[in-house]
Image 1 (cartoon, rainbow over the protein chains, first blue to last red):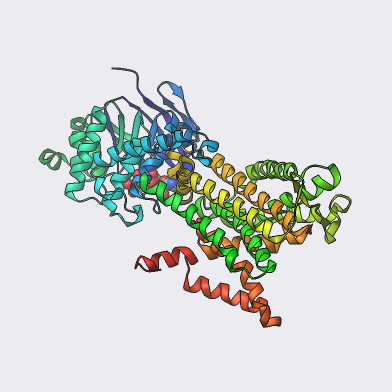
Image 2 (cartoon, each protein chain N blue to C red):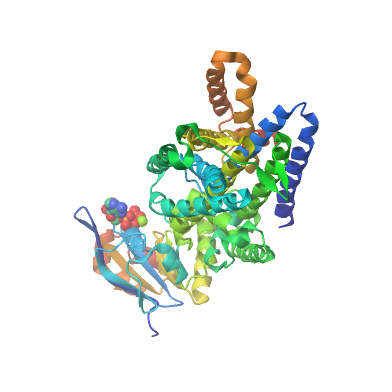
Amino acid sequence: MSAPLLETENLSIAFGGVKAVDGVSLKVQPRRIHSIIGPNGAGKTTLFNLISGLYQPSSGRVRLAGEDVTGLPPDALARRGLSRSFQNLQIFFRMSALDNVMVGRHQHEKTSLLSHVFALPSVSRENARSREMAMALLERVGLADLAGKEAGSLSYGALKRLEIARALATEPRILLLDEPAAGCNAIETEEIDRVIQSVAASGIAVLLVEHDMRLVMRISDEILVLERGRTLVSGTPAEVRDDPRVIAAYLGTFGSAEANRA
Amino acid sequence: MARLLSSRWAIVLGLGLVLAALPFLFPSNYYFRVAAIVNIFALAAVGLNLLMGYAGQVSLGHAGFMGLGAYSVAIGATHFGLHGLAAAGIGAVLSGLVAFLVGRPILRLKGHYLAVATLGFGLLIAMALTNEASWTGGPDGMGVPRLEVFGTRLRGPDTWYYISAGVLLLGVMLALNLIESPTGRAMRAIHDSEIASRVAGIDVASYKLKIFVVSAVYASVAGSLMAFLNGHITPDGTAGFLRSVELVTMVVLGGLGSIIGAIAGAAVLVILPQALTIFHDYEHLMLGLMIMASMILLPRGIVPSLLARLRGGKS
Ligand SMILES: Nc1ncnc2c1ncn2[C@@H]1O[C@H](COP(=O)(O)OP(=O)(O)OP(=O)(O)O)[C@@H](O)[C@H]1O
Ligand SMILES: [Mg+2]
């Protein structure tokens, strides 16, 4: 197996004495879908916030492609190829859907502030290039028809996909998706499923938090079960599904029977 | 692309036509003077709107930069014998530099805290201009030598109307350029979600600082123009707290995030008090009431609300 693209080592953070994430170690490989599941409040989003630089860990390390990136701010991580979506949408509501995705192109836009002020030809070329790539991504997530619409007017399911398109616009090497299918109908979930698999197939490492167990069991290469900030079990979908500790923790909410149906 | 470009040029062209046509309606020099003042405040308001309306950061001390621009011209010419244009250029650079130094610590603050910190900055500049009497003439202010270009003295209000109109037009064009650029998208993104902006690779602090510097340069140039037009400046008239409040009111009244709105806001706030002098004692009361009424009736600002009505939407 190749070297991991993302690696966390004993990552921990506490909020007022409560250890929200407690010594979590994981490795994510390119092309693989690594899922994190666990009950509400288990620390999944907090783990994402630690990895993406929004929170500073109280202990532990984060390594990206071998480089220690612990404590780096999110924009520095974005430049190193890490992007994410948000469970509680973080959308540029007053901008068009297309502009939302174009913002994701930011770090690839190299023209200077002065060239922007004087609208040099290089800027309109760059705008055109970003617009083209953003449009292609909107198409990829099935939102091309809504490109010109103000993001604030889009449905919840559309915004979930808009976040994925914006994250992909940064050209990440690793993509963190926090409950991308939450609140989505069956057709939208299908679309998201397809997008996630194509993202992984294109060589990107995917770290997925998702409550839709059928989706998780179907597409994950590896699953980590988090409970009260700690790793309960980690392994392939089959291993996790049949682990008695997991079944106990979930009181059968996604026991073997249901997962087999999926 | 073509649509954006054409709308950008349509705004500049339309504004240029209006500015060129207005003088035909002016019966006297007094009108030129008031219109020149509108242009000058509009320029500062356009710059402030980039900061407030697009990047979403408030500044209650922006007149401080107007003061720096105005006094650079006056002090540069009086004490150092500099040419007025060179002094105005130095003022713009100085204002940008001050904005850079002050902005770094201040722009980390958010909301009310940022408002209070920028307010403090504005007061500081006004106080410095008042206290350094040997340089600035103190609270009574100082005279500004007339600008001379190619042996011609620029003095009449009509001359300064055309000059300020040209500078405003240029300022509007550059602001529109900025808005339609990667920087413009970053500004608007920061306004809506700083977290998402950072995750999308935007160095939020550095962009806030850049826009703060740009808006300070706009205010500084406006201040320099004001000094040339008036021939005499005072700390309160250029850098005072009320001036800062006026600038913010122009931006909000005209419409946050609307370049034409900033100009409309400046026009209303400059012209209305002139028109209201017939109400003598109640002038300020009337002005205050009108501003309150328009914010209640047109909460998004004059221009965005009217545009929405024209398109048949709700205001
Ligand atoms: N900024 C914060 N300050 C204080 N407590 C926090 C903070 N962020 C998270 N927590 C706490 O950390 C714990 C883990 O929360 P987290 O949001 O990571 O759970 P989760 O696994 O994502 O849950 P869900 O499935 O509901 O999204 C919770 O008890 C939460 O209250
Ligand atoms: Mg969560």
